[in-house]
Length: 217
Image (cartoon, rainbow, N blue to C red; front, side, top):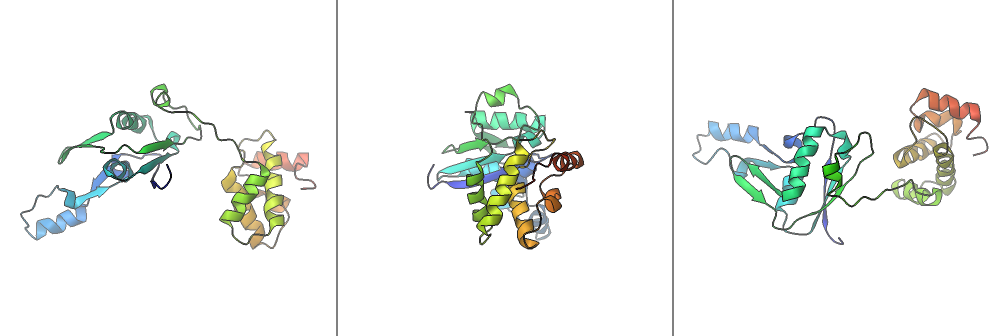
């Protein structure tokens, strides 16, 4: 959807409606009470819109990114399923709010747990694999302007080798960027010496060194 506004909801453990949908501006409500104002205490004046409500009320084209849904719990996933089915929510103090223009919704998951079939049935599934070393080097250059090509390309080749091993936790693009950033800060240090930047499990580091995975990288 070219030209659409992006609204992002980052899921995390313990996320609830107050993080995702709406909350009330309690400090302003308290000041309102102290001022003895006759205006309603629960009105849109004191409503804090979170990403889901913001996307629901948008009148312009919107892409709603629900990032890493697998980090949320089952209860939140059930609420999200209802939200995506009806594109409406009820706020007890204000009534029901229905989307005038439904957003385009993108849901991502890292498969840390399985999602419910009911949610997956409502999605068009697309698997995003790791980028090629060449494409990943372009990403590194975009995120780290000025990084030497030699560092970007060497790190990406090394990460590609690591992803070919049976490790507990394969490095993602974020680790690749962090590794290039570390080499840049340390004056192009040795890959083996900085392996802890990209691998966070002791057994993975030991296995990589024992097998000489990065030898010649």
